[in-house]
Image (cartoon, rainbow, N blue to C red; front, top):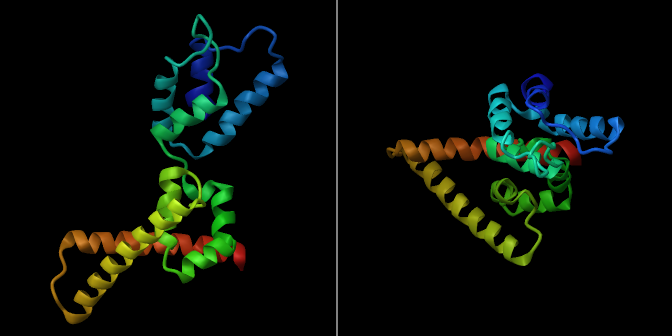
Length: 179
């Protein structure tokens, strides 16, 4: 990570404002490095090129703040949700067990993917419940057709495979914390 992002940006002229202690600078870069540990080499190279134009200060040569780096990193390669501690906590709590019992696990996981937060507001819950209902109907239809030996379209089979894999991922989150 340092080889592909931090060192090249430092070599390109990125620095910290005057008055920033070495410890503060090191801590800031360590925080960035810790967050970006999930990113692939290709994504880090893309992020490096993108950040070259995001320097702060009048000369555009100061390191961008943590939030800027993380925001652009999420655009280049989103952080896997399983690495977000709040996600495991949410699905390992009563909320996860309720989502499992209500058939909303995949819909709530999708909500997390798009919003980076749980569906805590009433309108969020309604949206997740509607999405879950659509998913469950579609899954039941595919399974019914398969059970009856009716030909199922390839796109439906692919969707069913995605759904099953996602459900398995989220069930593991529910089981990992509540077990």
